[in-house]
Amino acid sequence: MAAAVLIENLQKSYGNVRAVKDISFAVQSQEIFGLLGPNGSGKTTTLRCLCTLSKPDLGKISVGNVNAIANPKVARQRLGYIAQEVAIDKVLTGRELLRLQAALYHIPRKLIDPRIDQLVQALGLEDYANLKTGTYSGGIRKRLDLAAGLLHQPEVLVLDEPTVGLDIESRQLLWDFLRQLKSAGTSILLTSHYLEEVDALADRLAIIDQGRVIAEGTPSELKDQVGGDRVTLKIREFTPDQEAEQAKDMLSSLPFVDSVLVNNAQGNSLNLIVKSNTRVLTQIEQSLTSLNLPTFSLAQSRPSLDDVYLAATGKTLMDAEIAASSSRDMKKEKKQQMK
Amino acid sequence: MSSSFRSKSIDSILAPNPDLYEQSASDSNFLKDFGQETLALTKRLFIQLQRRPSTLVAGIIQPFMWLVLFGALFSKAPQGLFGNDLNYATFLAPGVIVFTAFSGALNAGLPIMFDREFGFLNRLLVAPLASRYSIVAASTIYIITLSFIQTAVIIGASAFVGAGFPSVMSLLAIAMIVFLIVLGVTAISMGLAFALPGHIELIAVIFVTNLPLLFASTALAPLEFMSKWLQVIASLNPLTYAIEPIRYIYMNSNWSMDSIVMHNPWFAINFMTIAVILLGFDALILLAIQPLLKRRFT
Image 1 (cartoon, rainbow over the protein chains, first blue to last red):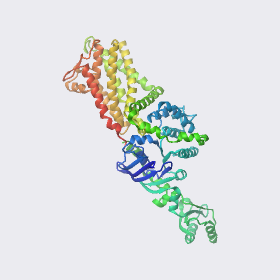
Image 2 (cartoon, one colour):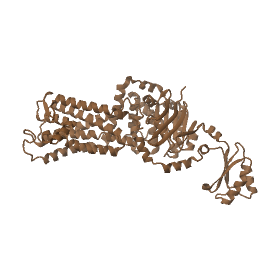
Image 3 (cartoon, rainbow over the protein chains, first blue to last red):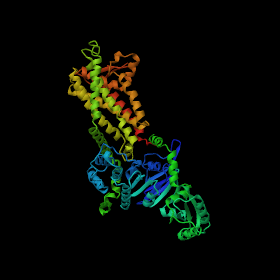
Image 4 (cartoon, rainbow over the protein chains, first blue to last red):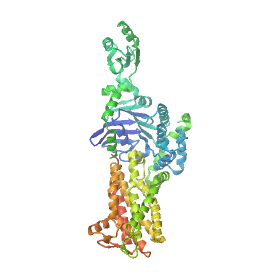
């Protein structure tokens, strides 16, 4: 059976900016696939190429067994696309917008209203459907946009940063809804720069950095590849430099410790990488006691996706995020995309 | 997203339905699909108009002001200057009809440009439209309706200032001419909305074409009044070929397809020629914008 979405060696530049350098991945049928990466890493450009809004410079894109570059119209029919910023006509009511969308996807006239009713109910929009969309909150807008994207019952739903700007409750509801959608048989491709979102939702993911895929697999596969467990230790709430260095020297010499890092930004807490599946907390605490040092907090965990990102790029996702936001001109990029 | 969505029946609502898209992927339904999407897009424009009627109100006031103020400006012109037994208001009315329709059509691309900038156009572009000409068709239907309302008001107002009231046949001819000029100009404007980088540029183009095309046409003065070079420009201006036949209809209640409407610097022109010129203009524009509509915003 063909993959729901197959992207091979995609390349795309805007002017001098090489937004996508080389991206390949496959979304299998009925799975949630996450594209994780900082802002500006090429996620949105990849989705724009998939949804036939942009024409790739190079590479192949298929939706099911359809070549999306040669047959964009057939691909469009099979995809539902939920853009990051919900574009709604605020003069229309939710129901009017859904009717317009249904007609654009050529849903037979007599099926339109029953179909809209189904989705309005499924997404809990009963109280809002007949109000102008200009009055909606962010969460309700997103739900309306989901309803619009699902009207034509697409094989693949594509979501760009689905929970940016949503409150926690809306976000949780959206996650539950996407899981439900998957179990009903829809394949889902989503981008996110939130680690916990991809970790919680995605069956498989690709990590993207500067227009390239740097890792691909299930969340636990990727974490296992990084190896080791993570230990976070605070000697005091705010540890003096000298004590931190003293503890670092001692901990580095322990046989089960691979590396120790002093994190100045977190009050000189110590980040350790230790051998996997060994319970080391008691030993660490005992060693500290022997140096007459107290323990404020101590925790052991499996590696996170952030550790995967860190191992592949040498920086944390947060750092990449901050670096990207200071070097990026969003207005200019939008202008470029419109050209 | 109520808690009830975990029920079994929801599964069937959310499940993909390949039948639906296999069905509509076939091209046999082209006309039906084109009609459906055009109708839906047109409906959106009329809902917007209904809830924000200021464009219509302004669109009626403006030609009225043209008629009153421009008419007053030349009211002391010597009798017979613009033709036999013709006052300037009567001479002006056809010019105002065409110019009003032209301005409306020239602005038709603006809502599309704003849809583009706000991302709403992406909703249309990711949809499997039968043809993007449905976007042009919807705007044309909308602008034509507005133009007909405006034209009716101008004809009524002109009758009131003594221009007389055209016969039913003449009204049909006027409607046909207005339709042909609006179709071509709307298509130009839509093409620009797809081609230009943003609304600032589109407004700039509208700004530099609108009034100059008015002055370089026979809307305000007959061809014979113009210096030779302006006559040539006015004779290349499609507006002239919409204004002159309407003016002829106003002045001669007995007209036929063979009636000589005007002489441009090169040859005499009857209604038949006018029809050919306007149809050719529309066909040319519609063909010319095809690559613009097809293009993706890279």
